[in-house]
Length: 317
Image (cartoon, rainbow, N blue to C red; front, side, top):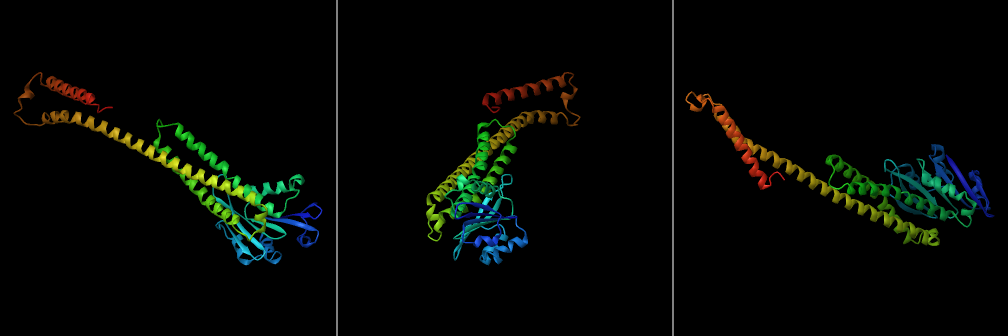
């Protein structure tokens, strides 16, 4: 789908006008959005806008690393958003020229839709231009990273609050590793976006950035905060993982100690039972009428005595 937003010199907004009218002198600036475009619509990037072939190729081959390329009067941006469920990166591209901006995304983008609706508001649009649209898109993309990280922080806090009283340590460990994997996916998106904003703030090739330097600096600050949150959460998952691995190891050692003590108690009892289980003829004790009761008593006394001794040693603690 191809949709067009054009702002005239007198401030009027026109939607879905023909592409040919964008070159009219009364158009102040425009925004063309390629939303899940068809093949014939993708061809307009070359046949009508005459963008660089390498930039058009990058639009169609996902996923590119977040970047900015400079082509004569046009700057090509590759940005990433996060799918709220899978946390997989989704690409949003745009071309920023002297008179307009062209956005391109092969999948529906919530951030582009929010920015589009924002620019339809005449009170908000007043005094804005296509360079501000570029800032608005970046800001929406970055701001939508925060809910995902806040959700992960809540999960980690819940795990930490439960302390060491968890019964299913295996399930808990798997949950921590899943969270670490999610943080790694987010990190692979946030770090390149942070580097991209750093390049923009220190570049002289994009005039729109100079005019809105404070706004782009704010986005960069948000990305720095996101980076700190990611690293902090990764450290927390590492601490929780080590803590519960240690707890699981201690529990295993406790179980092995108990089993070892029980085995030690039964070793002399097994020896006695083995001796009197032999089929030798000359075993006087086999002829005793009270022999069975004597042996059982000795075994009980021996087992009970060893149990009391181990208990005093603290081997059952």
